[in-house]
Image 1 (tube, rainbow over the protein chains, first blue to last red):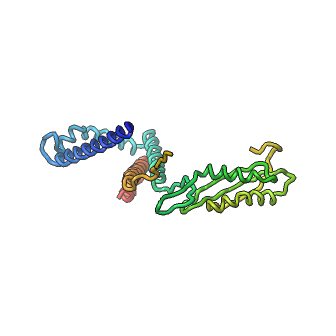
Image 2: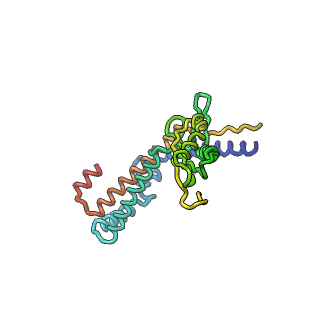
Length: 199
Length: 53
């Protein structure tokens, strides 16, 4: 209870402080758009921020870059890095993220979902019940839209066992799970590289 | 039995606002990087003016 009160107080204070900061910034900006030599004026801001010195420094740097040499190489690399970073940021914001949950049911009342790892472990437990299978690996990828997921099972079987029967038995073992969770199952059979070592 | 309610979605307007700020920053960064690279590669001023608008 105490933590909740403290958290609420902190949030309220953060909201108040940011609002006050925004209003203060707005007031300074409005009063700064004027001539003259007062503190809150454009010439005053230029003096405060030492923009004339900055202008001279940037002008010198741009002249050095244009002249070529080591400065130009460093600038070209920096520019390329900025472009890559910008593209990365755009991709991070606009790129669609794969959903982290397997949605089982979603309606107006809410959503029932499962973690992909848990679904995979359930599929492994069911798939390994078959006598034809030594070991099962599962990879679950939730669908981007709607419910369900894609479940890829790898059934490791002995060399003496028929691959088709091993995959069929694994598929039938997870059939119930797949139907209840709307999973699209893909099973492939594989013989482990070394006998007795499958993981 | 305790039942915990988990809030899994953030306020949509805040998310859109934050994304817009990052997109503007990213575009500015890419534009600045392009201009700096063009300057360093001594591209002709007319091309630079055409690209920067």
